[in-house]
Amino acid sequence: MTQIRIGSIEKVPITSVWPHEANDFTPWLAENLTLLGNELGMELELEGMEVPVGNFSLDILARDANSEAVVAIENQIANTDHTHLGQLLTYSAGKNASVVVWIATEFRDEHRAALDWLNEGTKDSLSFFGIEIDAVRIGDSLPAPLFRLAAAPNTWSKDVAESQAELTPRQESYIRFWRPLLEDLRSSRGWNIGTRNKASSYNAGAGINSGAFGRTMRFTWDEEARVELVIKSPEKLWNKAAFDLLQESRSEIEESLGPMTWERLDDAKMSRVVVSRPGHIDAPENELDQIRIWMIDHLTRFRTTFGPYLEDVLEKMQEAGGQGEG
Image (cartoon, rainbow, N blue to C red):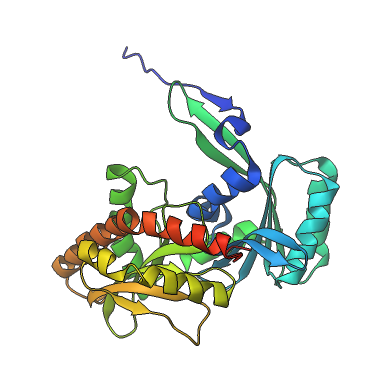
């Protein structure tokens, strides 16, 4: 008989992977929201980190791309406690969140019961989730995150199944487009991302520990394919000042990346820098292949080129007293 060799999963001390909640875990999660979204059955897009709520701050504010629901996420690299439960409710109310997610290493029975009670007693449009986080590995592999659902609304499993079953033809087209692109980023470049996306855009982190910046690949209504560097902190004035600082290095950036469109967007909260080409999701497959190659190329070059300039912008904004992420 052929002897099958398999490894065993072992837990890794979570603080050996993320030593500090605010400095390590929250920035990592902000760049890897797809992993959490897969557990929740959502397509999470980052809105901001350390988002101000009165004199306090919410760890992560996100949005579900499919439902447009506001998602409040509070992290705790420890067992749950009463303080964080109170903070979670305060922050969620302050941001009018429809989905509330509490992440901790272990949920105490009373806190699990509290989330169950909230799910049973609140309106259907408000959902509370408890997620336990571990770090695991097999043999000498790198540690990997392991999310486990500890509490969820009673209808969650049914809702997720229905949302995955009821796809429009356009959503199916986006899934077919994004899957090979994201699989390439995952396998060839080692990105820790999901591969299922039914929306017209895909958001990635900027490659630095800041939720104020991101990179987006997307199709627009006027038949363009775009890759964008987005400045998207919760504070409009911060975004405009950061854009102005970044634009001071425009000639150097474009020397590396080529001509780009710089959109300050004075009437919007965000600002962005864009490269684009003609492209539509209904294009022939050979054209979609070329769009995938083009998007991957620019997404990776954006990370390499913009990284040092974004770090410099952050440093200057901090010196000027700007808060950016909250």
